[in-house]
View 1: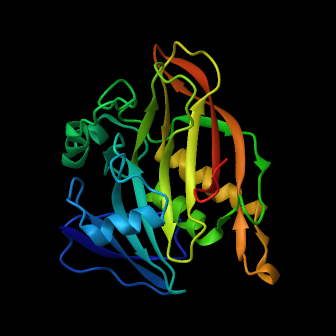
View 2 (view 1 turned 135 degrees about the horizontal axis):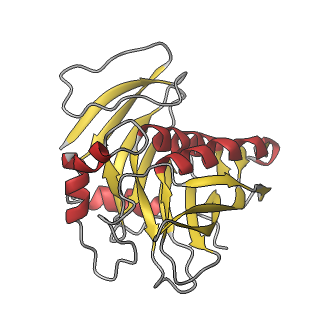
Length: 257
């Protein structure tokens, strides 16, 4: 099952209405298809996931953005994503949506992200971040994917919990897979207080992706296109009303660090 809506390139965020009878068309619009969570992927879908650098056993296909420049971008999200649809940041009502309940039913063996906990109503969980450019012809992701990652974060509600049991991993949380390659990936890991759980929200990811575009460089003479990559540290909400550090990276998933 999939749902289609139309959103403007001029807007940083939109309201998503599942099951809307007619899409709303605006100037310079692109079409976005929302996929049903938990759907079975066919052979073609699995091939697409592999080309996007995605392990289909760990991530699900969230949506497909058909851009006006002809570059289709698929958003893949880690299975542990605790999704809500309320457009306001925070609020008790955000945790009560059917999509959020659907998200809490997902149980991935060995999953190191836990859903349905103290943080589930927070999509904006982190403060200011440092930024350092990683942009190069190999590490950088195409800017089109980073742009759509930003829009996804700003129009989607939910978050990811980095659990204290994670040892030394740098988990891939979101992928914006492009038919042009150099797919954009968002990675996050704990950098202090190993005993504390902490979270990263969708709005945080949207902001970080948007701000990472400042480091974009053109590698067109070499046939590598316009790319960007960045990393930084930020402080995010943690359990027991605390704060804890997170190191994040946006880069091409095709580059093996």
